[in-house]
View 1: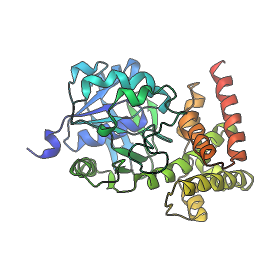
View 2: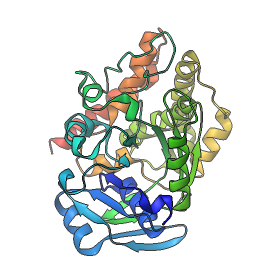
View 3: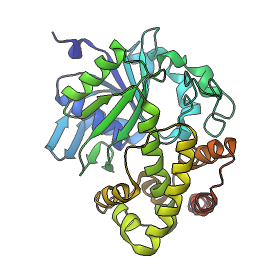
View 4: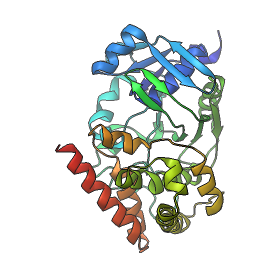
Length: 330
């Protein structure tokens, strides 16, 4: 029996990203427990997961439940939910987490663990926008966390039915920057599932790349109702994107991030993603809460700590928040 099959793995959250990960792992021979609820749980229990991606169609059955106690302590727990769901969710995951359990938050935006073992002037401090009451910090020992940046675009067509039209990439890293055996075990398991997986010693660098992508696309997509190719290609909209990108780059630089792209390349690659709706636009169209705190407010909080103005980003966030509140009241 291989090491990958011997692992106990749980995916918490059966949305587009969670189902994509679970389907690829299960199809590769790694049994997966999936924590889901409602119509999604019913769909997984009856029909399993159907994933359509660049490798074709994957149809798998997973062990799905809405009760952590059905699974017990896991070796690896992937948390694939929206950031705003974490305060209510994370404390309920205690039955899954033992002393050696690795917890991998696959969540957009600035993570609550950002300053854990960071080593800079704000080392150990919370990010109030995403953990205002310290619930997340208390719910889970930060030593259990391995950071993750997800570069997967996927859309849930219906519960358990997922479409993904771009290559899959995930990047993992210890908050401390160490290249540990558990990091390599995690990386290799995901890579065996046909997902490009990298283990890095500077996870915050990669994190800032995704933060900038989210900041310049998600809130603006809600404001204009546009897809990625429109956001990064339409001349008038692209001007707004460039201003937000420059604001975000200034904040990333202030925190010592090494960004491995130039703005022109960034815009070209983003436009090349095609007519893809951001996750925030998908949520807006469903009348769901928007992930603005992690994707936008937390970046503003970090900017304020360094006295960096972000006027355009603030305005776009305000407009997206207004639209989100308005949609939720319809």
